[in-house]
Image (cartoon, rainbow, N blue to C red; front, side, top):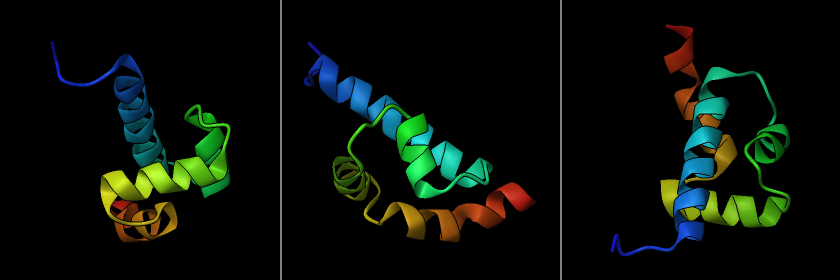
Length: 69
């Protein structure tokens, strides 16, 4: 019906949550990975990069100023 599987939906929600944590918290990328429900860091990095076209660390560094304003 929607064109994606339940697993895809869950992964998308987890990645969005991870992106919010990277911006709004002082957690490390590894901590964000586990806090957002990923048990495998390499899978998290790969899927994050596919979704946001950047690594989690680069994303955090580029967007950290948003939470400081």
